[in-house]
Length: 238
Image (cartoon, rainbow, N blue to C red; front, side):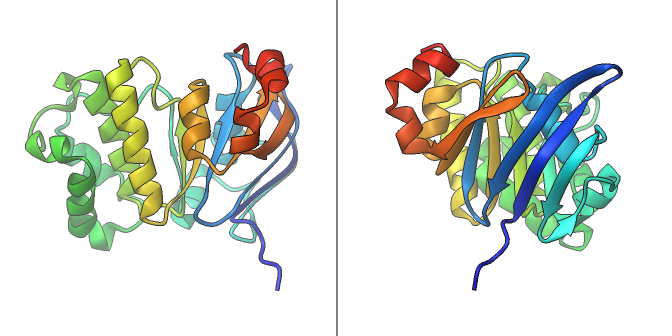
């Protein structure tokens, strides 16, 4: 029996005002896999994330999550289904404590298991446990990114969209972050990893899509894309 992908995006078009940003994106994420979406600045990666999560309304095409069409649903309803978007820039609440930021992640989903999920997040990110009472705005950049991801995990995601999680982090913290993403995936969470960090994204992803000018110009196994010199020169600038 053929099972439907967890996320199935078909001929997706989206944009802002009179500008078209996405010009027909096809993308799939199977249950429990990491899929990387790669491309340089301005190719539509964040717009793709925001359209999938309902923050930006799709102009055409379909988005199916766990078998249901969601392209017309509001963000809160999409969150309730278990599709959780950790946006670029962390977007934490700086004047609230680490613990309060985490608890807000379960506002729409998994509230009954808030305490257990908080302990799960602390097991993945021990530094957050040590700072649970500290104001989030006083954390380092790497710790704020951990907090943003931890807040997403509080909702028990079936699919976690990570938008540029390594942006602005030092090389050492980037290594640590990607190891933590791999750990989250090992616990059964599907991840859509949207990044400019090509090498490390391809190392942990199963499949990858390359975006350019609002379109998917290449897709395939991450290992194949990572070893294709022509592809890297043409689309990734390596």
